[in-house]
Length: 379
Image (cartoon, rainbow, N blue to C red; front, side, top):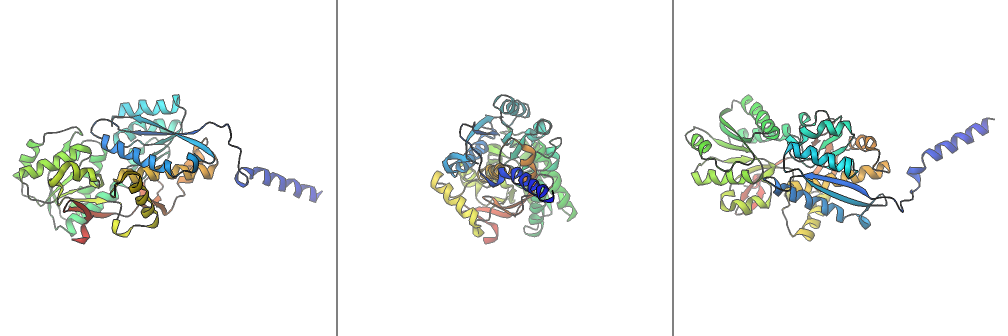
Protein backbone atom coordinates (compact mmCIF):
# COMPACT_ATOMS: atom_id res chain seq x y z
CA UNK A 1 0.00 0.00 0.00
CA UNK A 2 2.80 2.41 0.94
CA UNK A 3 4.49 1.75 -2.43
CA UNK A 4 1.24 2.51 -4.27
CA UNK A 5 0.82 5.86 -2.47
CA UNK A 6 4.42 6.86 -3.19
CA UNK A 7 4.03 5.84 -6.82
CA UNK A 8 0.82 7.83 -7.18
CA UNK A 9 2.40 10.88 -5.56
CA UNK A 10 5.35 10.66 -7.97
CA UNK A 11 2.96 10.60 -10.95
CA UNK A 12 1.10 13.68 -9.65
CA UNK A 13 4.35 15.62 -9.25
CA UNK A 14 5.57 14.66 -12.72
CA UNK A 15 2.21 15.53 -14.29
CA UNK A 16 1.90 18.91 -12.56
CA UNK A 17 5.44 19.84 -13.59
CA UNK A 18 5.15 18.70 -17.20
CA UNK A 19 4.51 22.19 -18.57
CA UNK A 20 7.92 23.26 -17.26
CA UNK A 21 9.81 20.04 -17.99
CA UNK A 22 8.59 19.42 -21.53
CA UNK A 23 7.88 21.86 -24.36
CA UNK A 24 4.22 22.33 -25.19
CA UNK A 25 2.90 22.06 -28.72
CA UNK A 26 2.53 25.52 -30.19
CA UNK A 27 1.48 24.71 -33.77
CA UNK A 28 -1.80 26.34 -34.70
CA UNK A 29 -1.88 28.59 -31.64
CA UNK A 30 -2.72 32.27 -32.17
CA UNK A 31 0.11 34.81 -31.91
CA UNK A 32 1.09 36.48 -28.65
CA UNK A 33 -0.15 40.04 -28.95
CA UNK A 34 1.77 42.88 -27.29
CA UNK A 35 0.22 46.33 -27.38
CA UNK A 36 2.36 49.48 -27.50
CA UNK A 37 0.61 52.56 -26.10
CA UNK A 38 2.48 55.82 -26.63
CA UNK A 39 2.20 59.28 -28.19
CA UNK A 40 2.91 58.93 -31.91
CA UNK A 41 1.56 62.40 -32.69
CA UNK A 42 1.67 65.76 -30.92
CA UNK A 43 4.51 67.16 -28.76
CA UNK A 44 5.56 63.71 -27.50
CA UNK A 45 5.76 62.05 -30.92
CA UNK A 46 9.58 62.09 -30.77
CA UNK A 47 9.39 59.77 -27.75
CA UNK A 48 6.81 57.54 -29.40
CA UNK A 49 9.03 56.99 -32.41
CA UNK A 50 11.94 56.08 -30.15
CA UNK A 51 9.79 53.62 -28.23
CA UNK A 52 8.81 52.00 -31.52
CA UNK A 53 12.50 51.70 -32.41
CA UNK A 54 13.22 49.97 -29.10
CA UNK A 55 10.35 47.51 -29.53
CA UNK A 56 11.28 46.70 -33.13
CA UNK A 57 14.92 46.21 -32.13
CA UNK A 58 13.82 43.76 -29.42
CA UNK A 59 11.54 41.97 -31.88
CA UNK A 60 14.50 41.55 -34.24
CA UNK A 61 16.39 39.58 -31.57
CA UNK A 62 13.71 36.88 -31.37
CA UNK A 63 14.44 33.58 -33.03
CA UNK A 64 11.91 33.29 -35.86
CA UNK A 65 9.99 36.21 -34.30
CA UNK A 66 8.71 33.90 -31.56
CA UNK A 67 8.38 33.77 -27.77
CA UNK A 68 7.89 30.38 -26.12
CA UNK A 69 7.56 28.89 -29.61
CA UNK A 70 4.73 31.22 -30.69
CA UNK A 71 4.79 34.12 -33.13
CA UNK A 72 4.53 37.64 -31.73
CA UNK A 73 2.36 40.47 -33.02
CA UNK A 74 2.88 44.08 -31.91
CA UNK A 75 -0.09 46.45 -31.96
CA UNK A 76 0.62 50.20 -31.88
CA UNK A 77 -1.89 52.72 -30.53
CA UNK A 78 -1.42 56.49 -30.46
CA UNK A 79 -2.60 58.00 -27.16
CA UNK A 80 -1.43 61.50 -28.27
CA UNK A 81 -0.12 62.04 -24.73
CA UNK A 82 -3.76 62.63 -23.74
CA UNK A 83 -5.16 60.77 -20.69
CA UNK A 84 -8.68 60.40 -22.14
CA UNK A 85 -7.31 59.06 -25.42
CA UNK A 86 -4.92 56.78 -23.50
CA UNK A 87 -7.79 55.07 -21.68
CA UNK A 88 -9.77 54.73 -24.93
CA UNK A 89 -6.75 53.25 -26.74
CA UNK A 90 -5.99 50.84 -23.90
CA UNK A 91 -9.59 49.60 -23.85
CA UNK A 92 -9.33 48.97 -27.60
CA UNK A 93 -6.14 46.96 -27.18
CA UNK A 94 -7.67 44.85 -24.39
CA UNK A 95 -11.37 44.57 -25.31
CA UNK A 96 -11.14 44.53 -29.12
CA UNK A 97 -7.62 43.41 -30.01
CA UNK A 98 -7.54 40.87 -27.19
CA UNK A 99 -4.24 41.54 -25.44
CA UNK A 100 -3.48 42.14 -21.77
CA UNK A 101 0.20 42.84 -22.41
CA UNK A 102 0.99 46.54 -22.86
CA UNK A 103 4.24 48.45 -23.27
CA UNK A 104 3.16 51.86 -21.98
CA UNK A 105 1.65 54.27 -21.23
CA UNK A 106 4.49 56.78 -21.43
CA UNK A 107 3.10 60.02 -19.97
CA UNK A 108 2.40 60.28 -16.25
CA UNK A 109 -1.11 61.68 -16.80
CA UNK A 110 -1.86 58.68 -19.02
CA UNK A 111 -0.64 56.29 -16.34
CA UNK A 112 -2.90 57.91 -13.76
CA UNK A 113 -5.89 57.72 -16.14
CA UNK A 114 -5.39 54.05 -17.05
CA UNK A 115 -4.15 52.64 -13.71
CA UNK A 116 -7.60 51.68 -12.33
CA UNK A 117 -8.54 49.95 -15.61
CA UNK A 118 -5.18 48.13 -15.57
CA UNK A 119 -5.88 46.83 -12.06
CA UNK A 120 -9.50 45.88 -12.69
CA UNK A 121 -8.63 43.88 -15.81
CA UNK A 122 -5.25 42.52 -14.67
CA UNK A 123 -3.48 44.11 -17.62
CA UNK A 124 0.30 43.73 -17.44
CA UNK A 125 1.47 47.25 -18.32
CA UNK A 126 5.20 47.96 -18.48
CA UNK A 127 5.87 51.66 -19.02
CA UNK A 128 9.24 52.53 -20.61
CA UNK A 129 9.43 55.70 -18.57
CA UNK A 130 10.49 56.96 -15.18
CA UNK A 131 7.96 56.36 -12.43
CA UNK A 132 6.47 57.17 -9.07
CA UNK A 133 4.13 55.04 -6.91
CA UNK A 134 1.47 57.78 -7.03
CA UNK A 135 1.16 57.32 -10.81
CA UNK A 136 0.13 53.68 -10.40
CA UNK A 137 -2.69 54.17 -7.87
CA UNK A 138 -5.44 51.63 -8.53
CA UNK A 139 -3.31 49.36 -10.74
CA UNK A 140 -3.13 46.62 -8.08
CA UNK A 141 0.57 46.16 -8.82
CA UNK A 142 0.11 45.47 -12.54
CA UNK A 143 1.73 48.74 -13.70
CA UNK A 144 5.53 48.72 -13.88
CA UNK A 145 7.73 51.74 -14.67
CA UNK A 146 11.13 50.67 -15.98
CA UNK A 147 13.12 53.87 -16.51
CA UNK A 148 13.87 54.65 -12.88
CA UNK A 149 12.32 56.58 -10.01
CA UNK A 150 11.32 60.26 -10.23
CA UNK A 151 12.20 60.77 -6.58
CA UNK A 152 15.66 59.21 -6.89
CA UNK A 153 16.47 61.18 -10.05
CA UNK A 154 15.20 64.51 -8.69
CA UNK A 155 17.23 64.01 -5.50
CA UNK A 156 20.30 63.08 -7.57
CA UNK A 157 19.96 66.28 -9.63
CA UNK A 158 19.47 68.43 -6.51
CA UNK A 159 22.58 67.00 -4.87
CA UNK A 160 24.58 67.61 -8.06
CA UNK A 161 23.39 71.21 -8.35
CA UNK A 162 24.38 71.96 -4.75
CA UNK A 163 27.60 69.95 -4.47
CA UNK A 164 29.07 70.34 -7.98
CA UNK A 165 27.62 73.63 -9.24
CA UNK A 166 27.50 75.20 -5.75
CA UNK A 167 24.13 76.69 -6.63
CA UNK A 168 21.94 78.20 -3.92
CA UNK A 169 19.23 79.98 -5.91
CA UNK A 170 17.20 78.29 -8.64
CA UNK A 171 14.40 78.90 -11.12
CA UNK A 172 12.36 75.85 -12.14
CA UNK A 173 10.43 75.32 -15.38
CA UNK A 174 8.33 72.16 -15.24
CA UNK A 175 5.50 70.41 -17.06
CA UNK A 176 2.13 71.16 -15.48
CA UNK A 177 1.40 67.42 -15.27
CA UNK A 178 2.07 64.75 -12.63
CA UNK A 179 5.57 64.00 -14.01
CA UNK A 180 6.69 67.63 -13.91
CA UNK A 181 5.06 68.34 -10.56
CA UNK A 182 6.72 65.33 -8.93
CA UNK A 183 10.15 66.37 -10.27
CA UNK A 184 9.54 69.87 -8.94
CA UNK A 185 8.40 68.64 -5.52
CA UNK A 186 11.19 66.12 -4.94
CA UNK A 187 13.91 68.46 -6.24
CA UNK A 188 12.63 71.33 -4.09
CA UNK A 189 12.50 69.12 -1.00
CA UNK A 190 16.15 68.03 -1.35
CA UNK A 191 17.44 71.42 -2.58
CA UNK A 192 15.88 73.44 0.26
CA UNK A 193 17.12 70.99 2.88
CA UNK A 194 20.62 72.04 1.78
CA UNK A 195 19.77 75.74 2.19
CA UNK A 196 18.81 76.18 -1.46
CA UNK A 197 16.10 78.68 -2.43
CA UNK A 198 13.58 78.45 -5.27
CA UNK A 199 13.29 82.01 -6.63
CA UNK A 200 10.56 81.23 -9.20
CA UNK A 201 8.80 78.15 -10.52
CA UNK A 202 6.86 78.08 -13.77
CA UNK A 203 4.43 75.20 -14.49
CA UNK A 204 4.04 74.99 -18.27
CA UNK A 205 1.66 73.08 -20.57
CA UNK A 206 3.35 70.53 -22.83
CA UNK A 207 2.44 72.35 -26.05
CA UNK A 208 3.65 75.84 -25.02
CA UNK A 209 5.82 77.53 -27.65
CA UNK A 210 6.27 81.09 -26.35
CA UNK A 211 8.27 81.56 -23.14
CA UNK A 212 8.94 85.31 -23.29
CA UNK A 213 6.87 86.20 -20.22
CA UNK A 214 8.44 83.57 -17.96
CA UNK A 215 11.98 84.25 -19.17
CA UNK A 216 11.60 88.00 -18.70
CA UNK A 217 10.87 87.35 -15.01
CA UNK A 218 13.74 84.87 -14.72
CA UNK A 219 16.18 87.31 -16.32
CA UNK A 220 15.50 89.87 -13.60
CA UNK A 221 16.05 87.35 -10.81
CA UNK A 222 19.18 86.79 -8.75
CA UNK A 223 19.79 83.11 -9.49
CA UNK A 224 22.51 80.49 -9.92
CA UNK A 225 20.88 77.78 -12.04
CA UNK A 226 17.90 77.09 -14.34
CA UNK A 227 16.09 73.73 -14.01
CA UNK A 228 13.98 72.33 -16.86
CA UNK A 229 11.75 69.48 -15.71
CA UNK A 230 10.06 69.62 -19.08
CA UNK A 231 9.70 67.16 -21.95
CA UNK A 232 9.29 66.79 -25.69
CA UNK A 233 10.02 69.31 -28.41
CA UNK A 234 8.77 72.12 -26.16
CA UNK A 235 11.73 71.55 -23.86
CA UNK A 236 14.10 72.03 -26.80
CA UNK A 237 12.30 75.28 -27.71
CA UNK A 238 12.50 76.48 -24.11
CA UNK A 239 16.27 75.94 -24.03
CA UNK A 240 16.63 77.75 -27.37
CA UNK A 241 14.67 80.67 -25.93
CA UNK A 242 16.87 80.77 -22.81
CA UNK A 243 19.99 81.07 -24.97
CA UNK A 244 18.43 83.64 -27.29
CA UNK A 245 17.64 85.82 -24.30
CA UNK A 246 21.23 85.51 -23.12
CA UNK A 247 20.69 84.06 -19.64
CA UNK A 248 24.20 83.02 -18.52
CA UNK A 249 23.29 80.56 -15.76
CA UNK A 250 23.81 76.81 -16.29
CA UNK A 251 20.79 74.88 -17.54
CA UNK A 252 20.13 71.50 -15.90
CA UNK A 253 17.52 69.01 -17.11
CA UNK A 254 16.50 65.38 -16.91
CA UNK A 255 17.02 62.16 -18.89
CA UNK A 256 14.61 63.49 -21.53
CA UNK A 257 17.54 65.50 -22.97
CA UNK A 258 19.74 62.41 -23.39
CA UNK A 259 19.03 62.12 -27.10
CA UNK A 260 20.60 63.06 -30.42
CA UNK A 261 17.32 64.78 -31.33
CA UNK A 262 18.10 67.42 -28.70
CA UNK A 263 21.40 68.24 -30.40
CA UNK A 264 19.85 68.10 -33.87
CA UNK A 265 16.87 70.33 -33.08
CA UNK A 266 18.56 72.74 -30.66
CA UNK A 267 21.75 73.08 -32.71
CA UNK A 268 24.33 75.31 -30.97
CA UNK A 269 22.03 76.13 -28.05
CA UNK A 270 22.45 72.59 -26.68
CA UNK A 271 26.12 73.24 -25.96
CA UNK A 272 26.86 73.14 -22.24
CA UNK A 273 23.41 71.99 -21.13
CA UNK A 274 23.65 69.47 -18.28
CA UNK A 275 21.23 66.59 -17.68
CA UNK A 276 20.78 63.35 -15.80
CA UNK A 277 20.95 59.99 -17.56
CA UNK A 278 20.73 56.28 -16.83
CA UNK A 279 23.45 55.11 -19.20
CA UNK A 280 27.14 55.71 -18.48
CA UNK A 281 28.70 55.19 -21.90
CA UNK A 282 32.18 55.23 -20.40
CA UNK A 283 31.39 52.13 -18.34
CA UNK A 284 28.98 50.04 -20.40
CA UNK A 285 28.04 46.55 -19.21
CA UNK A 286 28.26 43.60 -21.60
CA UNK A 287 24.48 43.74 -22.13
CA UNK A 288 24.64 47.46 -22.95
CA UNK A 289 27.50 46.97 -25.41
CA UNK A 290 25.45 44.28 -27.17
CA UNK A 291 22.42 46.61 -27.30
CA UNK A 292 24.46 49.51 -28.69
CA UNK A 293 25.97 47.30 -31.40
CA UNK A 294 22.50 46.11 -32.43
CA UNK A 295 21.17 49.68 -32.42
CA UNK A 296 24.01 50.95 -34.59
CA UNK A 297 23.59 48.04 -37.02
CA UNK A 298 19.84 48.68 -37.38
CA UNK A 299 19.54 52.46 -37.06
CA UNK A 300 23.09 53.78 -37.45
CA UNK A 301 22.75 55.80 -34.24
CA UNK A 302 25.55 55.52 -31.64
CA UNK A 303 23.52 57.53 -29.10
CA UNK A 304 20.00 56.08 -28.78
CA UNK A 305 17.68 57.93 -26.43
CA UNK A 306 16.58 56.63 -23.03
CA UNK A 307 13.20 55.80 -24.58
CA UNK A 308 14.79 53.35 -27.06
CA UNK A 309 16.67 51.37 -24.41
CA UNK A 310 13.76 51.47 -21.92
CA UNK A 311 11.31 50.17 -24.55
CA UNK A 312 13.78 47.44 -25.47
CA UNK A 313 14.06 46.42 -21.80
CA UNK A 314 10.29 46.53 -21.32
CA UNK A 315 9.78 44.13 -24.22
CA UNK A 316 12.53 41.77 -23.05
CA UNK A 317 11.17 41.69 -19.48
CA UNK A 318 7.73 40.72 -20.81
CA UNK A 319 9.37 38.05 -22.97
CA UNK A 320 11.26 36.64 -19.99
CA UNK A 321 8.10 36.56 -17.87
CA UNK A 322 6.15 34.70 -20.59
CA UNK A 323 8.92 32.13 -20.92
CA UNK A 324 8.90 31.59 -17.17
CA UNK A 325 5.10 31.28 -16.88
CA UNK A 326 4.74 29.28 -20.09
CA UNK A 327 1.97 31.51 -21.46
CA UNK A 328 0.85 35.12 -21.69
CA UNK A 329 -2.64 34.30 -20.40
CA UNK A 330 -1.90 34.26 -16.66
CA UNK A 331 -0.97 37.90 -16.13
CA UNK A 332 -0.89 37.37 -12.37
CA UNK A 333 1.98 34.91 -12.86
CA UNK A 334 3.70 37.41 -15.17
CA UNK A 335 3.28 40.19 -12.62
CA UNK A 336 4.58 38.09 -9.73
CA UNK A 337 7.59 37.03 -11.78
CA UNK A 338 8.55 40.63 -12.60
CA UNK A 339 8.65 41.49 -8.90
CA UNK A 340 11.42 38.91 -8.49
CA UNK A 341 13.73 40.74 -10.96
CA UNK A 342 17.01 41.72 -9.28
CA UNK A 343 20.06 43.21 -11.02
CA UNK A 344 18.65 42.48 -14.47
CA UNK A 345 21.31 43.22 -17.11
CA UNK A 346 19.30 45.58 -19.28
CA UNK A 347 20.05 47.84 -22.22
CA UNK A 348 19.45 50.85 -19.98
CA UNK A 349 21.61 49.49 -17.17
CA UNK A 350 21.34 46.95 -14.38
CA UNK A 351 17.91 47.29 -12.85
CA UNK A 352 16.03 45.93 -9.86
CA UNK A 353 12.23 46.08 -9.76
CA UNK A 354 11.11 47.46 -6.41
CA UNK A 355 7.95 46.51 -4.53
CA UNK A 356 6.15 49.62 -5.82
CA UNK A 357 6.74 48.67 -9.49
CA UNK A 358 9.40 51.32 -10.14
CA UNK A 359 13.01 50.33 -10.72
CA UNK A 360 16.33 51.15 -9.14
CA UNK A 361 19.23 51.79 -11.48
CA UNK A 362 22.46 53.84 -11.57
CA UNK A 363 22.44 57.52 -12.56
CA UNK A 364 25.06 59.80 -14.13
CA UNK A 365 25.19 63.47 -15.14
CA UNK A 366 25.98 64.33 -18.77
CA UNK A 367 26.47 67.46 -20.84
CA UNK A 368 26.89 68.57 -24.47
CA UNK A 369 30.47 69.39 -25.49
CA UNK A 370 31.46 70.23 -29.07
CA UNK A 371 28.15 68.80 -30.27
CA UNK A 372 28.57 65.46 -28.50
CA UNK A 373 27.00 63.92 -25.39
CA UNK A 374 29.70 63.27 -22.77
CA UNK A 375 29.83 62.50 -19.06
CA UNK A 376 29.95 65.68 -17.00
CA UNK A 377 32.66 64.11 -14.83
CA UNK A 378 35.00 64.15 -17.84
CA UNK A 379 35.17 67.96 -17.84
